[in-house]
Structure formats: C-alpha cells, structure tokens
Image 1 (tube, one colour):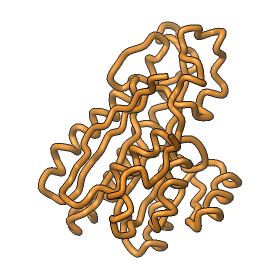
Image 2 (cartoon, rainbow, N blue to C red):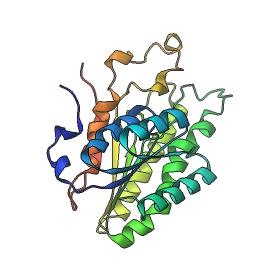
Image 3 (cartoon, helix red, strand yellow):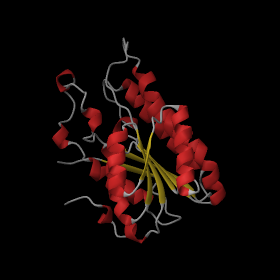
Image 4 (cartoon, helix red, strand yellow):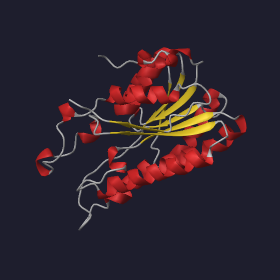
Length: 247
C-alpha cells in the first residue's frame, strides 16, 4: 500500500497551513514536504544542501532557505526569511533536521556528543523558544519533533546519539506540559530505524547488530505520521507517536 498524504481523509479537510520544515533536503523532511504540498499548504523548506533543497522547493512551489540550524546566525536568518514570506510565525514547525553517528562512549576521541548536540537538541530548542511566544499570543500552533527509538531504548554504540534523543524527548515532555490550554501543542514522533541518507556513512561490518536497510522504515512511511500530526483539527493533540516496521 503506498503511503500518501491522503491516507487519512481528515488531512484533506484542514484549511491551508503555513509550515516550516527543517532537514527538508532529504529523508523524512523531504518526504514530509512532498506529502504536504499537494494538500495546498504553504511550505518553507530548510536544509544544509542548497541544490537538492532548491530543486525540491521548485517542484513543490515552496520557499527554500538554505541554512545550518546548528548555527545561531543561520537560525536567525531562517526565522527572518520565514516571517517575511509568511507574514507571521508558521502554523506548524516540523523539526526533521538531525545528525547521526555511532561509537562507544569509552575513548570517544571524535567528540560525537559535541557534533550531534547542536543539531539534535540546541536547534529545536532554539527554534521553539523563538516561535512559541507568538504562537501562544495567537492561540494556535504546533511543534512536531522527530525523535528516535534511541530516545526511549538504549543500544550499544549509541551513547552520543541516544543522549541527544533522550534530551529531545525531555524537551517535548516539558512543552507538552507547559503548552496545555494555550492552543499550541508539541508532538514527538519516535520512529524506529529509517532508511535515510544518515545511514550512508555507517560501515555495517563495524556494527553487525544494525538492522538491514531493506527492513527499515521508509521516509514516506514516517512522513505519513508527520502529516497526521500536522493536520489534526484544533483541540486535538497527537502528543506522542511511536512507529516501527514489521517486515
């Protein structure tokens, strides 16, 4: 069965939304943008790779803003361009940008946590902190965070990555409490291993316990849940969604 944005008919009934998607040049972010565009939503796409990002934006009729969300100056520029294009903060912010690396904690000379933390934790925290005040004043808005199974289960070699995803789960949990009654919501989607370009540099022979990529979730399968969360009627909050593949 193909995974399309119209898998749930209520998604088609929601008025057009303004949506910012980070990590939109590939993987779950790109699949989410591709699913949302046919429903008439106004999209701002952010990613580090200008060429594929612009190509996707041209295809979907979206605004492309090349930026590295790990960099404060890039985040500020992204928010400025988004506000200028939309006239306000977005209705929905989808935090799909992510960094991934494997390695044991003992003897970590690659400083994996320092590499992953700015993308996986600081960026979503900062973007939420910057956009939530206007959302709360408006009385509407959604933040959707793409977590990971590694944010609730521990696997060997996942010390740095898991630390960031557990932290993201903590950020979502606090926002889930802080935003109650404001009309603004936070959703955490935690997929199992998903076949995205993040896996390309991983040497499978060095990590024999990893799942086969053909058995992983596909980006469009996860994107279907993101579309579901983004397009719920006002007053309906899909707070926590976990997704796994059974093949």
